[in-house]
Length: 102
Image (cartoon, one colour):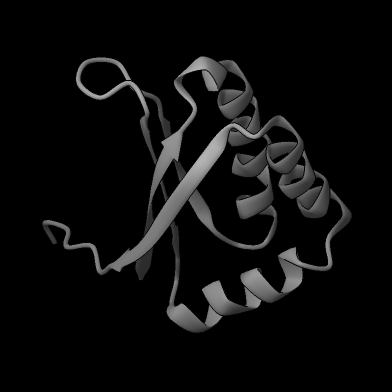
């Protein structure tokens, strides 16, 4: 399993718009075989950092999701929404391999 960890720098005055963006993406990741673990909005600490995490069985399936998302109308609409709202300033993507207590 591979987990994608996304760290976003967001416009703190557009958290409502970013939250809507996150709610758009959760079912889209799952539509393509992933498991979304949620979006996490600022509470205490920096008011412009948000996180998201989702997992795929392996990196190959994640890469298939990325390719398919660029062709999917709902995904394209979600990308466009964030671009129009300008709620995301930047983001970085990191991959992790989770460890569970067997």
